[in-house]
Length: 137
Image (cartoon, rainbow, N blue to C red; front, side, top):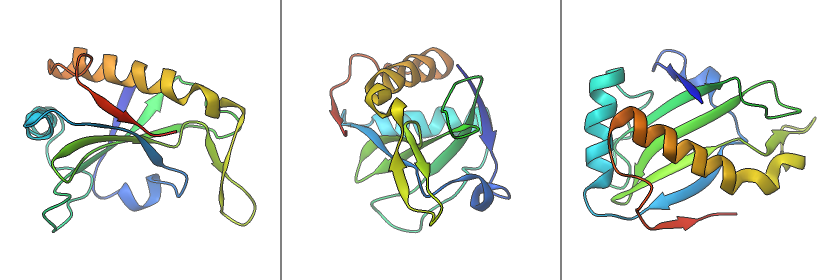
């Protein structure tokens, strides 16, 4: 898996309405630890929310990962109410009326989420795999 950072200038055009929560990681302090590492690696977040429940959001295009029929996969790494939230449009696409609908890959979202956690752990050197999570279908 290879992630391409989406800077704040491109955020609005890159993030789709099909991005949905994959899982929330609940270890205290994990969100801040990941935020610090992402800030070192990528600089300013893709977007910054001025609210206590959400203070950063780093968005990435996933290179070379099938999300048929969509042409690409988007990933969001953010904090939400003190938890680390991983989100993606993997397994979702927009129909003609721009409504999010499930694709054939939807059943593989948990597998995709595990690949994402492994990649982030290796890249950021932050322990994500042994953390408890709240998986979202």
